[in-house]
Amino acid sequence: MEKMRASRNRSAPTVDFTTNCYENDWQIMLARGYLRVVLDRCCHDFNRRRLVINNVRERARVEAAAAAAVARGDIDEYLFVDDHAAAALEFFQVSKTSLGRGYLYSISELVALHISDASYLLYYKGDSYPKRRFRWIDDAVGLMEGSGDLVVANLCWNDRFDLARSESFGQQGDFLVGYGFSDQCFLVKMSIFRAPIYNEENPASARYPDYAGESFEKRVDAYMRNHELKRLTHRRQSYVHKNVPKRGLGRILRRLRPLA
Image 1 (tube, rainbow, N blue to C red):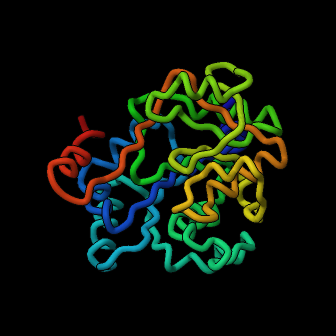
Image 2: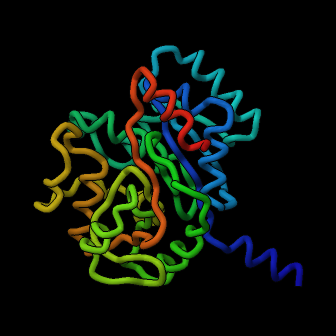
């Protein structure tokens, strides 16, 4: 019986967790307790818990804070984008020039996908976090394992459940089914996403903001629409996406909000 249980555990899909930080938010994210709370709300035993660090001024200072987070057990490892960007771009057959302004909005995600060897990757942008503790990852993975056209899942964004329903055309369990993709929060099937799929276009993907250029999320949306691949959005649970102010009381409150 023990051998059978161990065999099932070994064959179960693995899930990595990754989030990112940069100059404006690394002090918040690497403060004691922040990442621990974010991960606790995910309610999942992850294969690896990573932090991707990009575009910081004082690497040694940030690295010391990241190493302290590893020592506390908040995360398993950290890495700097500059050390892995070239390999990720080569693997995905994407050039920095083609990304243009979208490079800074895309490279952390591409590095995270390239470095992971798990079956699935849950990624949160540094300015996003789960609103509350809730188990949803196993249910989403089960649905994606059972259907070839379901390749990404996420919680709803900022409690916009009505909007999520309006953009969906079906439902499976607690998830709405539809097109679309956001880099704020995504749980992706790595057999699809860890491949050179990031060079397609689709007219519907022009809705993404101009300031982000030819970004990762825009290219994912185009690929999914071109190949009729769909996402799952939870119909009752949400994540919070809120920009990190650079100064003042708003910055202090943003630091405290996930801990409240």
